[in-house]
Length: 265
Image 1: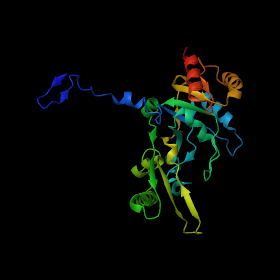
Image 2: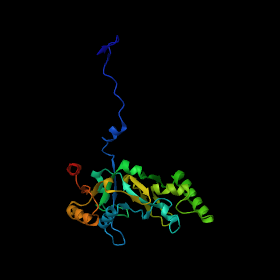
Image 3: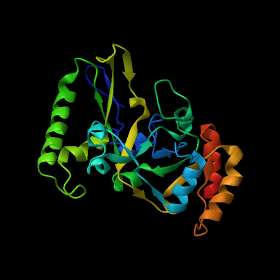
Image 4: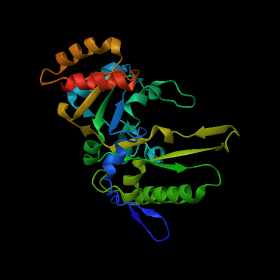
């Protein structure tokens, strides 16, 4: 220790070296290194389980639903496909169970079946976090300019159609990565509304997303179906050199860690 004339003490311990951000993030329990895609029962009679088997056997997640503020205005036009995306959540694995619950005001009921990928892999493939835009009445500094840009682009397309896949206007390349949130009263019937799913921390990929079995970190399914699911997956996809580990979204973090560790061993 070094004593100054004032009597204060100065430590000889060297200053801390800067810490890599990756080291910090690994200790953030509210962040996840994975992105999860959960399936659901379709209106065409395909169950969430069947949908996941199809995804894994085909090694492709298909973008079949349009998202974002331009979804409605591009519907039934040649540009509808530009708004279709595959959705993920960066909710930590141990909290994925809450995504599978029936939630008030949410029209989609997600199942306990899904697949998880490493976030860095997904980013390399063009998966991106979405931008939540506040549509609460009075908060029009974002929504009004955005709506004008969308309408201008659609009007221009009507005057001089372009190739719907190679020449999509820039604004329509952005809108699949946006989602509205807010509260207010509908002008049509005076009913109040609340739309805010920003807590889902959604990521999206515009268009279909292909992958290999080696890209899959884990498969999510109810524990009671693990044995049957592996059997059915093997029957559909004999080319799988390995079956990714299976987790139940309702398991605790400790149990998930044990299952992943055993799979790695």
